[in-house]
Every structure is written in structure tokens, then in C-alpha cells.
Length: 236
Image (cartoon, rainbow, N blue to C red; front, side, top):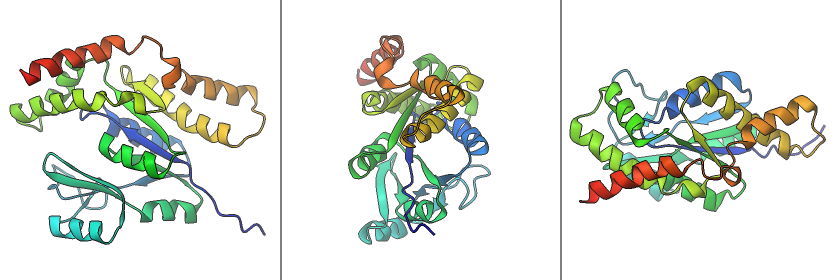
């Protein structure tokens, strides 16, 4: 019997609030096997029907700070006055269960993970433009106007980090985005298996490769421009 330890592939997914990331992640977890999802810890209050241990682990600020002191986090950050963090135990659990690990974290947390886990695959989800993001934030109808404006300004600053990610997925058409995200995750597994690929497997890798940062060319320019214009207005 082999005693080799499973080394999980780690996938980082980041996106501005309102980009449709949660929907994409939920669909990915339904369709791709052996993928463990890391549920973040946070000090913010639950929203709507959120429950502890499902969307987040909701803890007090003092509990979170004790976890920081005890070095229990792979990454943590303070966003909009609340802490968010990924516990180290999720990486250990994925290793024990012989599964890969999916991290849904912001750009601050992603930067910390990339320093610690250089082989992690990073995916940044973009809305097609600033106007679409604003419409999505308003449709959620969860936030006050000043919060929406703050999220839009924050989005423009988060998007400036796009070039730190291996893949950029523009979430324009949901069904296409789901298919592409699945292809990225499966394609990375196939490439790291280091064996000849079948024609069908090559097609999967090819679908994901279309969103590889190095292959995007000028496609992102109008999207980035729409947020840079807004960011300048927000500073004024």
C-alpha cells in the first residue's frame, strides 16, 4: 500500500463584490468532484438567511484575534471594518481527505496565500464593465446607497490587482462562465498529472486556456478603463 501523502491543488478565486462569484463557486462545487471548499471565518454579522458554518463561521472580534495570535490562519484581512480569514485546518483536511482545496478570498488574502503557496492556481472574476457591476449590486438590494458607492470604489482598486492572477474570467454570460470555470479547475488537474492527454482532455485544457492571463491580449482594456474612470471620479 502506498503511503504517499496527497498534496492538494489549491484554487484561489477572487472578485469584486457583486461579480457573481458565489453563484459560480456553488455551480463549480456541484459539478467537480473531490473539491473541498474552505468556509471563511468573519466577525461581520450574518445577513438574511446566512447560517453559521454554511456561508461563514461567524465569530466575535476577540475570538478572531485569539485565532490570529494562535497562528490559526493561512490568511486574514480586515475589510469594511470586519475581519475575514481562512483557517489552516482546511488545507490539512483536504490533504487527509485526498481532495483539492477551493479558497474564496479577497485580493488581500490572495496575496498572502500566493506568498505561502506558490503553486496555487489563482482566478480573478471580472464583471463585463462597471455599469453591469453597479446594476448587479442594486439588484441585490441588500445595501444602502453609500455602501454601494463604497463597494464600487473598492472594486476599482481590487481590479488593479488583476495581473497577479493566473486566470481572468469575465462573467458576462453565466452558463459560459460556469463552463469555463469548470474547465480551468479540471484543466489544471490534467496538466499537473503530467501524462499524455486524450483529445477530449485537450479540449478541456483549451477552454480554460482562453482565460489564462498570458492569452488575453487587449480583451481586458475596455473593462479596466471603465473602472479606472470611475476610480478617478471617486477620488474627486
